[in-house]
Image (cartoon, rainbow, N blue to C red; front, top):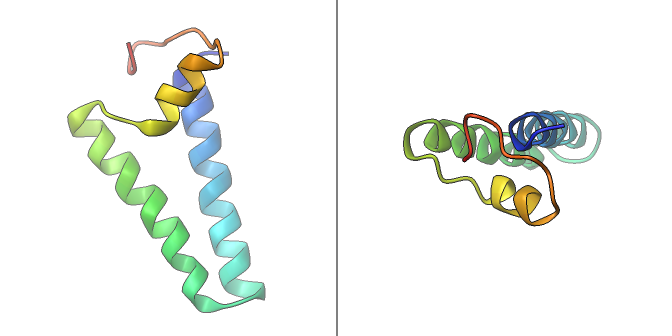
Length: 67
């Protein structure tokens, strides 16, 4: 699995967790989903993604988006 796919999977997991926590625990948890979405948006333009850096250090192969 490449870094790109891991970033997408992790972002999806964070967004789903934020929505579930907002529904079952407290509506303010929706900010977690908003943060993940904003991070994905800025990384599309800047190429900087902290999660991609972590996954690279863990040994995942870089994909075309995060080289």
